[in-house]
Image 1 (cartoon, rainbow, N blue to C red):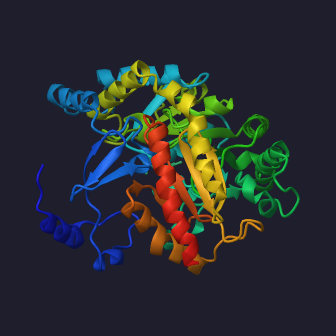
Image 2 (image 1 turned 180 degrees about the vertical axis):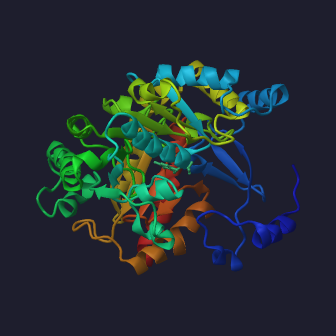
Image 3 (image 1 turned 90 degrees about the vertical axis):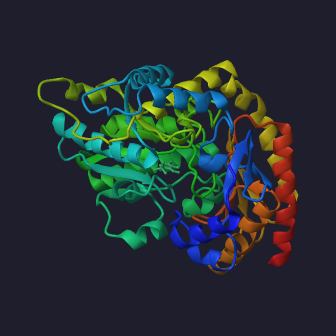
Length: 462
Ligand SMILES: Cc1ncc(COP(=O)(O)O)c(C=O)c1O
């Protein structure tokens, strides 16, 4: 479709309120406008091509321009454009719920659809509270989550989020959420107050998991409903779980009757080479929250997947989970999700990620020869590159340096060089990569080369 570029720029500046955006940035520069995508690449309004190194926003599992998914959406819109799941059902919601239940580990057989990730997190917290009220533990309502973890922006999900700067503008938020340490092993010494240096990952994982028990005891086990953890924590720059971490968390949750919620809004649907991160790391959650890759971004959809045990109290008499969203489980979105999973199966997408993740890691690890690259970490097709001021001491940048480096230079420079990804300072400064799952070695090389060029320049600015 042809657009008038000047009109788009003017209208964007006059009318479009972009998310998490410093609008003043665009007082002196153009708004980047993306008009189309093809495979692992996106194109701007002036025809320039970028490698989609972030999969949009951890979303585009199959990449762009997949006609099967677009056709599935069109066919469904023609057949039945809309009907809600409020006491009614439609075939795609039913079949997708069945399919997800079959993919999900253990007895996670009950699928509650939402329109996105934050709503899935909200739904999980509300379910946890409601479940305990119905099963004789009405005081259980509090939630634990990890420092620097992001779980969404609605008031409940934001309260669970562990990023104080994101919350300050909106306080007071929903009360009753508490933080436990994250699993950034590169910063283990700081996190443990010098107790552990991270050289023994298992010991660090045990320590971090045990802090959940400490916090449950501090709050009173009879008041704690759930702990929300991502398989690999995104904010802060990809913290995979140390070995044994989730197994110990599971034991603690069982001991205190606290629900383990695996927030897989990013990690599910192939990002880590499995349908679910819990599968990769071998633990059994009580609830999985998911969204993003469920449709590869061709339509909005989220899903909270709960165990049979959690739905059981709602199956009798006058009980119901008095919760829902008009567009949750939309016919078009569920049709697209079915088509998405057909492609996953036909093209062996999970196997492709597992076969290529080692190459992705070793390609990115080449960057460790740069003085500014402190750590390269992640799993599957999900990586964070931590930037440091001093590699030997692991000294990080102060706020002013971070601002200059990330906002002043890196984000724009990477984009100008043809790589769309994210330079983030919600924890220590990191570059986040989450490319489409169809990528392979030439894409990895392209990412590495652009990052090398730009990071080389960045180091000279400091
Ligand atoms: C782990 C996690 N939970 C929840 C959310 C919120 O999802 P949404 O933006 O779809 O509401 C995100 C978004 O990035 C996320 O990464």
